[in-house]
Length: 132
Image (cartoon, rainbow, N blue to C red; front, side):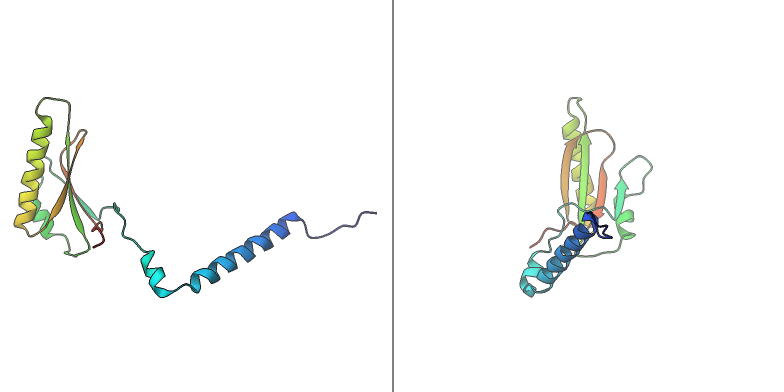
């Protein structure tokens, strides 16, 4: 004789998932405070807050930088791209150096990325400052 039951395997699986969730939450809650802070790391590359393209007709970089809020947690990244033409990489390096000088005159340090590709140089402001 077969009895009918209102509980199936789905209900048992949901109960087990709930128990696992409660155990995980309890273990995270009870860990030492120092370990919790050690687990938080700044992203090496985060989403940019603001982007400047060094295209013809664009305002100078220092004007753009004046419009951005200063925050010591922010990192300025200059990305210059170069094509396959002879001397294109040197031209991209020169453009990156020019933008770095403009940022330095405004009191901002920056990292420089020079990579193959097309398009104007780009300056991005993001929360990318490496952990010290």
